[in-house]
Length: 245
Ligand SMILES: NC(=O)c1ccc[n+]([C@@H]2O[C@H](COP(=O)([O-])OP(=O)(O)OC[C@H]3O[C@@H](n4cnc5c(N)ncnc54)[C@H](OP(=O)(O)O)[C@@H]3O)[C@@H](O)[C@H]2O)c1
Image (tube, rainbow, N blue to C red; front, side, top):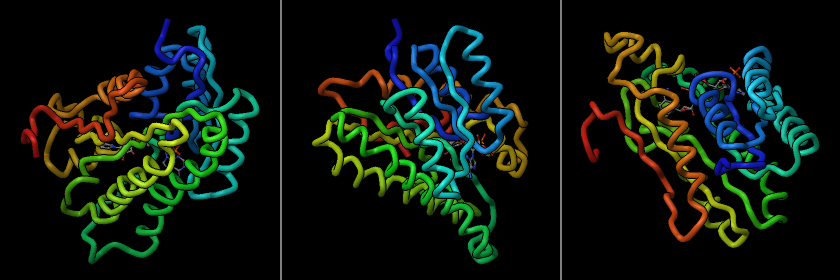
């Protein structure tokens, strides 16, 4: 018996990296998965793997930059799987440049994916959760949502915005029994952070960086909190980094 038995989880950025690890960890806990991303091949592959293992998973192609695409994806998941119990807003992009060199186009890409798309996804999923007076929204933030990092201006801004949105969402939805959490990891071994490791001269598979599976386990832990205890933000730093920063 898993802690997510029969629960429908809509996970964005589900095709690779942390999102894919969350899909696998949630499926292992019995969740029914809606796996969303743009790269159809990746989400179909992960869903086939879950189905082959006896689970249930639906690939939903979705581009966070396109409002209609988000609306269609949420609707498809709800009509084929039922009401969404857990929404994991995981998808994001990272660009690296000094603010002074950041083009408006790059800025807009980051904001529309990491902030606007996340907002629209929440807004589309919320009505059914409010109606049912239950639900959980896990927003995957970052250490970049807590402090500044050189050459991560657009990304840091977007992750600080995610925290602001989550704070208001938590206040506005508490009376509907909805729990809003942020997980804020430091460096994780995925494609998103590959350039960072290269810039810092660290190996691509550096053991000092967290694995996507470790972040997924934090998401599973968050889902165990159904009683009086509540972790608003779960900060997951690399053991090799400065403690309590
Ligand atoms: N890796 C790290 O070091 C690290 C550290 C802290 C926090 N995080 C956060 O963890 C989350 C996952 O990151 P990751 O490292 O797993 O990244 P990743 O490996 O690059 O995966 C990103 C996922 O987001 C999806 N995505 C990107 N743009 C999208 C769009 N416009 N519409 C729909 N889906 C989109 C990608 O799929 P498609 O391209 O197919 O759409 C992909 O599945 C992000 O929120 C990131 O900020 C990562």
